[in-house]
Amino acid sequence: MKKTLSLIFTVLFLAVCLVPGLGLLLTGGADAAANEILPAAPAIAADGDFNPDFLAETAAYVNGRFSFRLEGITAWAKLNAALFRASTAENVLLGRDCWLFYAPTIHDYTGDAPMTARELYCAARTLYLLQEYAENRGGDFLFTAAPNKNTLYPEYMPARTRLGSVSDMDALYALLGEMGVSYLDLRDVFSQEAEPLYFKTDSHWNAKGAALAADALLAALSRESNYFSGTVSAGNTHRGDLYEMLYPAGKELEEDFTYAPGFSFTANTDNPDRVTITTESGVGTGTLLCYRDSFGRNLYPYLAENFASAEFSRRNEYTAATLPGGGTLVIELVERNLRYLVEYDSLAPAPERDASLVETAALGDGRAVLTESAGTEGYTLFSGTWDGVTPDDASNVYVLSGGALYEAVPRPDGFIVSLPVGSTIDAVYAAAGGNFSRLSAVYAID
Image (cartoon, rainbow, N blue to C red; front, top):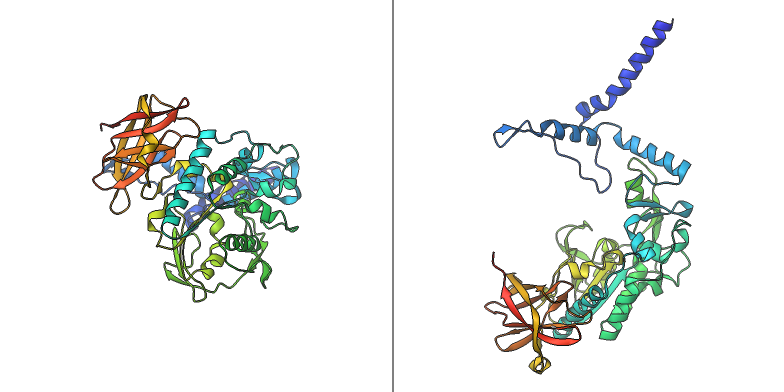
């Protein structure tokens, strides 16, 4: 009897061990979880020779695709959440009342890694220059930061996490106000609504939240809309991105709302994750160029309806040079990514400035090391890095080219400037140590 039981147990144990592997062979294995990139199938040969990494690649392939992998991850995550109130997903933070938060936003929430004063000034000046370009073309400009979920709903954050007093968004908006840059603080808009307008299990606003944001954006652009209080249909249709990261095999859906947009697509498809979406509306007026991120997935339909033609781009480089004359330029960027304003290039022809600005500049220590690359059509993009000089936090940057003075887009470690093809840079000007100085410009040697 004991031998029989031992045999049965052994057979069952081996069967359980074989199931994941057999499933991989028969079905191709498990799918990728949210935001996960699985290893490709290993190849025995690489470039005509034996692949020395074949065994390691095989192990990685099997580990990522064996059957019931996602079910196992989900079961383990639910066990940890129930027993220890702990998240097994690196980017997911467990909040109160079953709320989930995107873990990388914790630095914005606590204020323990704020942007530097120079980063903030460069970000604000970048937006100033983009607005100047749009207005010089007879258009409008508006910037807004989509608040992190824990910025709007801190009461659902874990009790052990303390809200900080430092906010990059506060500091940036203060600088924009001083410079006269048009911006919309959506925190004020959302704080007036009692109901939560972000998903509990997602890092983004829901469709009603997007409608509220759209109404506020359009009002700031002197356009009328009433999407938030309009008629919508509701249903449990949304699977949160944070929920999917934490419970990849979970089946729970969250309530969302549906709005029927009054526009048509002129290119591509209606996939909201496309890098570029172009639309036409029979009831809208004017043209729109909108740079947006993932928060724009359910925001853009409302904006599209209000403009005769619109282009929505998910590129992190803001190419204002493509803005049609008289068009509207809108930039939406989530709070947690405000540093993108100084990490990615913003491309617009550099504005010319009065040369008298630098007449009294003395020759300073240090220099700007230049590289150049193709810019937008008809322009060359010059990138400069500082060598032996640290500009003041609130310093603008100017370049002298062919006897004309242009303002560059400042960066914490240098600048970028878009000049007509054939241009050269003769000198660079910046304030350092309280003194406005002329710096030599040298080209990097490859």
